[in-house]
Amino acid sequence: MVQTIDMQDMRYLNLFESATGVRTRFCFMYNESLIFCVPKPLISRAVGENGRNIRKMSELLGKRIRVVAAPRGIQDAESFIRTLIIPLTIKDFGIKEHEIIVGGGKNKAALIGRNKRRFLEMQKIVKDFFNRDFRIA
Image 1 (spheres, one colour):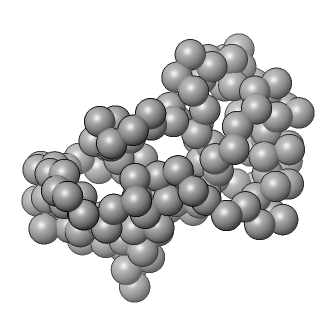
Image 2: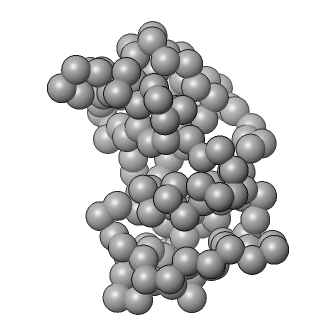
Image 3: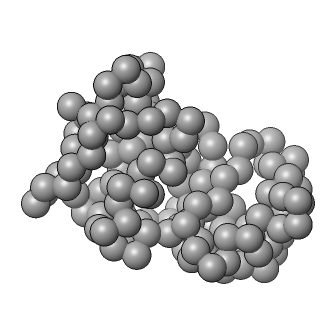
């Protein structure tokens, strides 16, 4: 899980920690949402009572904020990717030696996005977390 952290990401991480009390190293943008990955047992603490922490951060930043469970390895890849692309669903999911293949079905165009924006974002996320290439079949 190698990810370079620029100054903007560092600001987001510091704000997240001060607002929620949960320390994390992983934040990224996907589908115009700022997504933070925290260990699974700490998700409810990060979200806060009735989503208070997330609502406060969203108002401060003017962006949609999401908190997801950080994957522990390649075995969590499918659940992690399915969580990221909610409300879309994927039909097929496969992990090969050097790539992760997702079968889009009816949602293929939505997975790719205008000008391949979502596809390129997901490629970067998969490369950072699982060190594999991402492909939509």
